[in-house]
Image (cartoon, rainbow, N blue to C red; front, side):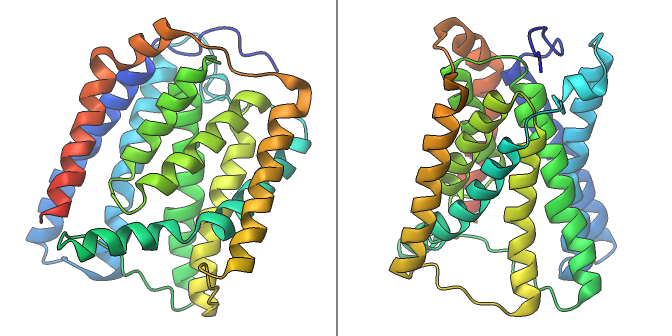
Length: 287
């Protein structure tokens, strides 16, 4: 597929800043309404709160479409692509879960040991209705909207190596947790590179969905996988190695370096958006 034309008029860093500002505004209004209604915890609170960032991303995606002469499909880069990229997506999602799934716990324990606050969701999936609800809110919609935003609106047709890394940094910061920062950056880097090589967000949506939904499904089924087991980690890392070797060598197309593109991405909007998320992460640590 061809992604040569700029798909929207939003610079990647500006899109990120607008989304984060909207996310914070919607969160403030939403949390205020929930507090006034005495909804301060439980599944209802978690379900409603999960929509705040999704609404913010949806607004920016719609705005990007309004400022573009292209269709929504083109703006979010939901193009047809070769089936082999979906195989890469499956390998990536399983490899990340098994090979690096322990990272979040390691980082969380480290910061907790230092006396800092590392919030955890505490979400429980107890029945099929929970799986359906949170499967939509935490797996399906995030896979579609986050990939449409980060690998579509923000990435656009850019194939610069610096932009690939920049989008991945923003993706990691967006999740707002120091515990998941490293994992999300590595995963974001792989998802972004997958989108560049496939010229479509469809494979990265699949990988994103599998990763999120597997956690919910395992919680419901009470399946416990020892992510610190050496054999499991080795299998996961082998799959990740297979993904990276395969995705880099397949068609032998690599992102190009472009310092100007990176500068335009970050200055000044990208820095402001990233700064807001860093501030939020730090505040959560001392909450």
